[in-house]
Length: 332
Length: 153
Image: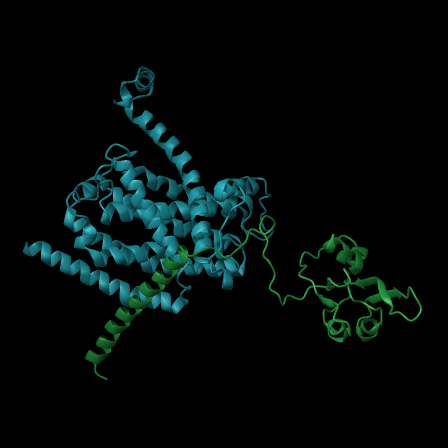
């Protein structure tokens, strides 16, 4: 049954118009989903970390500690939001807001199923890339405004790292784009109905995965936070709910990165027997599990290793892959 | 080295590196499903190993239905921290002394174990007690005879 046929919804449509209702409902769903997803992912991360280290992970609050992150959120909300005396007050206040907005905006174009997409756009992929690159700005803002040497070093690293890894990320995505001739998320998904693109583009998939891990500042590329050297990097001075927003943004970015990976390489919502939504969510969480798994397996890179890896390995390989894809497509 | 062998080295480095990464991922994936070694402490407790050295306690012997302490005081004299206090009494003339009171101030004990080594009747041993948090300094004074009674009852 189409939901728009319900009399109540119909009345709202008549009152507000089709686009506005879709926007309001979409934003509501996103705003509910983002914090819940982050809470769940933090729990999953702690569980996976625990089991890899032969610990049980959180066990106390709720069955197998599933409510632990909700309790943590309550704790963070009740904490004082300290602003350091010598900090740039306005930028310090602005940075957590700027980091969470792109994370939420990117959800607009993610196709959860053929019907469940807040807004279809011709430039879906570009929208995600352009908004997620704003994250760097806010990290730099946070690091600079904190007036703290560790925060500033973390922020400077973030900029260098994100600039370096954006190039292989875009190049690996380009090899998909020239195969589908579209930036639309739904068209890219539709193009993979018989065979997933990971079969045609395994190298691009690996490069995409590594670059997104670096872009979302996850280990082994978490030089931005680097607990053992930089206290906790750019959010050293942040407390309470402001800190929680950085955390929320990190896990939301992870979800976006994983859903991009699912759309570009793993056929999005395509799959037998089950509806598209289930397939999409399963693929996304499987990819997120791999990201978490990688984090708890590998040690953090040194900064020169990180840069060398981006410029000497990732970019040449991605360029070569793109070139070969183009030649093959032209020859066919 | 020519440029070609440099290039070969570069490719080999990427390949061997990727291989070791995959091996590392395999190890952590296997550990993900291995049994957990952590114990949820207040609900489940571990049994200590036989050679665990807690504070000292008296051994129960079946022949006397009690300990073998004769209150000789060797442990008192050998103790480097002076934490042991023993009192005994002789019930009949010509009989051995019988230890009646045995206190240690565990807050100052260094767990050296000299008292256990020196005991001529071999009636001292280390307990397997590890929950040793006290609210006051006096809680750290352990009455070993009462402990033995509590164990035998």
